[in-house]
Length: 166
Image 1: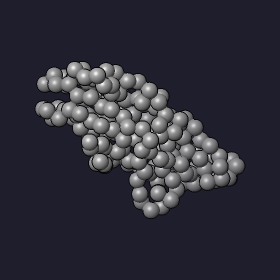
Image 2: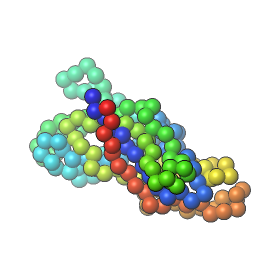
Image 3: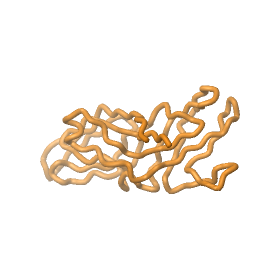
Image 4: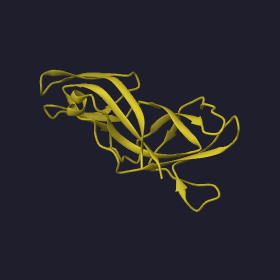
């Protein structure tokens, strides 16, 4: 089985451990994607939301997945299954080395992810240990001041990609 791992990267200034608020396997964290139909190539007009804590039955199967969606153009059904325990936070060391950190693995059937959309519900901590929760990355950046460390903290240049893993 081939899975796609969502990997993120960013420029972290005086911050480390960027991840979803409840950790990479947070059952409530919403992952938003633009999806392309694997049959006709049509792109979803809006972002599609998938959460680990919500499962639905796979039509014509005894299994479950996290999303079943029908293409509005060709009406073919596809599904998305999340694969937990594959993620870790993005660290300061990753940023300095220009590396990506895996956040979550997905099994896409009938759809291909086209784009990941950063939103609300992230957390990070300063290099001095101050915790920043509920970070909203929908604008593409985050800036704050760390009182304890007496320094500015910032997240910018957000990037996301999907990498094939077996």
